[in-house]
Each structure stands twice: as C-alpha cells, then as structure tokens.
Picture (spheres, rainbow, N blue to C red):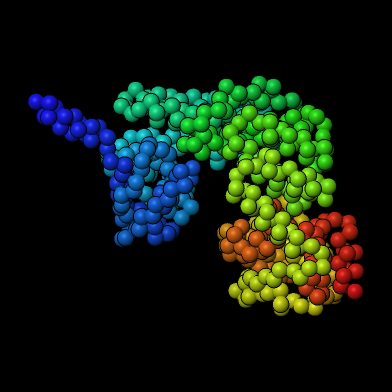
Length: 463
C-alpha cells in the first residue's frame, strides 16, 4: 500500500512540475529576415527559429516564467513564456511596421499572458510622446492619468477572468506603472526645451515614482524595465545632489564628489558598477587632472571585472592615440561603393568627422563643416565624414538631401566598426585631425564650429 502511495506521489509531482520547455509555432508574412529570434536580455538567453515557407516552429528551454522579445529583424512583440506552454502565433511584419499590434494572433496553451501584453500595446502613446511633452502641465497630467487608468482597467478585467498567477500580474502592473512614471520624468527634463511654457513644473511631478522600492532584487534580475528604472533613478538623484552642491561639471571637485556618491550609494554593487562605468564614458574628453582622479579611484566604485578590463583597454588605446603617434588606418566605401582608405589620402591633412544621421549635435556641425570645405578647397585637406549609421539608406538619403561634400563614407558595423574601436569613441560627433605624414595631431579635435578650427587647418596644410 505504501509503495502504491509513493508511486502515486511521484506521478503527481511530475504532473505538477512541467518540463522546462516551451513550444512555439507560427506563420509570418512579409518577413524581413529568414529567422525568428526569441531572447531575454537579462537572462542572456537567445534562441533562433528558422522560417521555412512563412512558417517557423521550435522548442526552447524556459526554466522559469519570464518576459521575452520575439523579433524578425528589428520588428517584433513582447511575449510571456512559462514552462510547459505551447504557443501559436500569426504575424505580419508590414503591419507591425505600422504599429498594428491588433493584427497579431496569439493562441495555444499558456498564451493568455502574451495576448494581454499584446492587447496593452493598443494603449501605447509613445509615438505621440514628443507632442504630449509640450502640453501644459494640467493637460499632460490628464492625458497620462487617463492612459494609465485604461491600462489598469484592462489588466484588472483580464485578471478577473483568468487563472494566471499573481507572479505575472504583480510584474505586468509594475512594468506599466514604471512606464507611466518615466513619462513624468521625461516631462520634467524636456518640457521646457520643447515648449514656450514659462510656468514652473509642478513639484509633485518630481515625486512621481517615489513609492516604487528600488531594492527588489528579484525584479532587478527579471525585469529590464525595473532594472533601468532603478539605474535612472539612482543616477538622477546623484546628478541632482551634484547640481544642488553647485559643482562645475567635469571639474576635479565634481569628479571626486561623483565618485564618493557612487561608492556610498545604498544599492547593489551591480548598480554602482553600471553608474560608475557610465561616468567613465567621459574619461576620453576629460582634463588631465580629472583623468588622474579616475585612474586613481575607478576601482573604488567599480568591481565588475569586465568593466575594469574595458577601462584598462581604453587606457591602452588612448595611450596609442597621443599626438605624434601613427594614426590608426581606415578603409570604408563611399556612396558609390568605392573603397576609400587613409592610404589613398597620404600627403594631405585629414579632418575626420565620425557622425550619424540620428545625432542632433552631428547635424548641427554640418553647415560649419560645409563652410570650411568651401573656403579651404584649394588646400591639401581631405574632409572625411564616416557615418556609423546602422541604417545605410538613411545615410544615403541625408548625404543627398544635405548635398554633403568631401569624402562621404559608411562604416557598416556602426558602433562595432573599427573606427569606433581604434579611436575609443564613446559619443558623437567625434572629430579627428591627422597631419600629412599620417601622424595624429588630435584624436579628439575641435569641431568645425569652433573659432580656431579654420586657422588650425590652414596652419597644418601649409606646413
């Protein structure tokens, strides 16, 4: 009798604990790639399903419930996967390009949560956010609150008619609350820039989200939305304190206080690592005194070995970029596909602009760069613009529209391209100046809009 009970218990145990796999089947129309990628960036998992005659299917390992991204090219949807599910999908990428999420059909065992998430996309007002941020405070608040109420009501309605776990609802509610809070955060940051409003922003706007705890480790490990909210909130508090102390950004005092605040932060080391690593992004553009502080103190705030290794590599790269050293070579295709390399330009002063069509400060420099090219066209100066656009077509269109001159080249691997690595580029625009002998004059040169740029180029060209 005991033996039968034991066998029954084992059977029940396995029946209640599904295997850690999810089966996904689908039909996709107008695909832009021949594969489907299913990923969870926080868990660093990624699975690939091949599309054959518009169909895809496969089984992937899912050890615990979680939020995933399903993508074809750069288009896709968010889905919720849990062990034992069998999900069917119907997608049309042309419709997703136009944000038509209602066209997505989701069915099968364990698909209810994914259906809810897709239905909630119909309440997404992100495409109109820029215009919403220009609204007067009362109109903005009414718009955001009404939108959030609609989302909450939709979740509550689904909750009352579904047997899903509190685990899912707890997290989906948190995600949308954070997304609502972030709109207030953006309003406090950008409303004045985007509108002519002279009225002060209501003080309560700055406190929206204060009730969201920043110390939930489970959320931090599982939810990208929560993780970024924690990082942004801690970073914003640090920046506010630095501003309140009236410290000049980029000064020795500012840098020491910034490091002190990161070190003393009441947060996990991973938070300190990421905020500290972000602070180090300004290293290349800092004064020598500030660089000395970072070199002496960076391991106080950063413990992550990957970040430490990256910073040491940066120091090594920058050491190789000192004036007088041989400039790293480059070779990229122009608008006609012809390969142009630094070797082709020997004997000329080379003024490089690393830029992208989506970069506002980059576009602000274009008129100044065109003026320099026009005024100095008789001198031995090669004006080389290297785009790091991921979208090559956008680059080609802007070159044509803006009638850009000089050497217009495209680095096809955008932020993974050699020019970015060789010159330790962390932000753009980035200007680089090389003399006629191929030696570095300045790996972080002054911009075309600077009053001294023209004189410096003439001096080098005539030397």
